[in-house]
Amino acid sequence: MPPDPPAAGELRQDEERPLSLYIHVPFCSARCSYCDFFLVTRLDHIEAFFRALAVETRAAGPLLRDRTVKSIHFGGGTPSLVPVHLVAGWLELAASLCTFAPGIEIALEANPEDLSGNAMEELKAAGINRLSLGVQSYRQRKLSALGRRHSAEDALRITREAVSRFDSVSIDLICGVPGESTGEWLGDLQAALALAAPHISVYMLSVEPKTLLERRIARGLVTVPDEGVQASMYAAAIDMLSAGGYLHYEVSNFALPGHHSRYNLACWMREPYLGFGPSAHSFIFDGAFERRRANAGSLLRYLDNPAGSAAFEEVLSEEERFVEQVFLSLRINRGLDVEFLRKHNKLGLNLPKVTERFIANEWIVIENGRLRLTDKGFLFADHIAGELISP
Ligand code: SF4
Image 1 (tube, protein in one colour):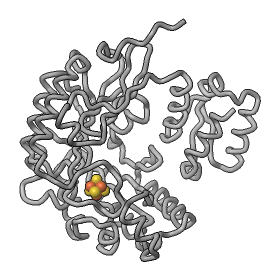
Image 2 (cartoon, rainbow, N blue to C red; image 1 turned 90 degrees about the vertical axis):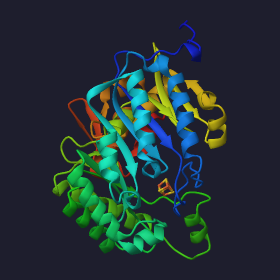
Image 3 (cartoon, helix red, strand yellow; image 1 turned 60 degrees about the vertical axis):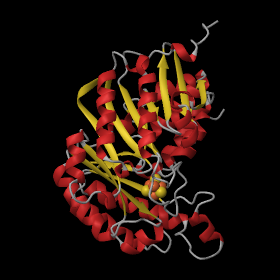
Image 4 (cartoon, helix red, strand yellow; image 1 turned 135 degrees about the vertical axis):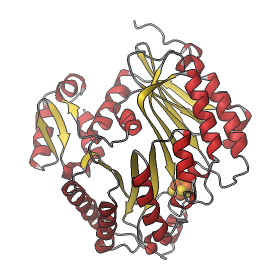
């Protein structure tokens, strides 16, 4: 019988694995039409939120002590809405509780409308070395359809300035926006290539329940491009960005050499991370056990009890670890160890049959003992992973 997992209060991080930190900053000045993230649009709680964040961070001291942190990611919400001295103060606190690795990545998600004046220089001075810009498009029509608050002109100017000032810059682009043509999407890709942002994330617009976008579609006010058009937009992104020297290293992510997101890659590679703030998730190694934990998606609950707002915490079973490993490994270009798959899946003799079918469809390749998705296969990543784990 395996020993019982230790109680939550006795958690210790596995010393061998590098650690990352995530801070969920749950504020936006307004909600974009397609967004279903946890956030609030009342900004008068920002200072109180950072006081609570300090309490939660200090309470995580035992998990941080003697640990080296390789990446920190301020996500949201819109972290660029926050006065920079609050970000700097939290970084100072974190640095007093753990060791920052040499060359640590400290990334912050920012919206172009928040970055005028000295904002970029202030963020750099606070320690931010990677800016993740919520550009979404360089086309005014698309930005208006998405309910974004920056103009196309802001997007171009801020990307140009950020690329010249920061060690690394990532931009998010969305395709499949209501009324979008393939030509419009190619224009966005051309603009991004001309601006030479070292990292580009490409997302297909997803229509989430209870969003303004969903209501508009239900009322017949707008239509989104169908799946076939979205797939051809995604294929165009792969072709153009690969030709531009970007490595397609994850389903939605493209990087020039050395500019991949260390924080996101840590999550996909199942390295440990600690999340702070409402709705933030953590993945904690605890001897032979792996735990996932999530804070409740409630700002008031978080402010009331910052160190005790976990909504769930679970130790992963062996089966759950296997499923996670398959789904996450297939998202990245490194792929999945075939031996690992053979050992753990329940397909037995059917595995070669399944993989042969995927190879014939040109969805996967098997090279040097690893199973990787092709560019075509990336579109079906979850479907392929699902079949590989099914008995
Ligand atoms: S800025 Fe980002 S997090 Fe905020 S509402 Fe828009 S999509 Fe959502």
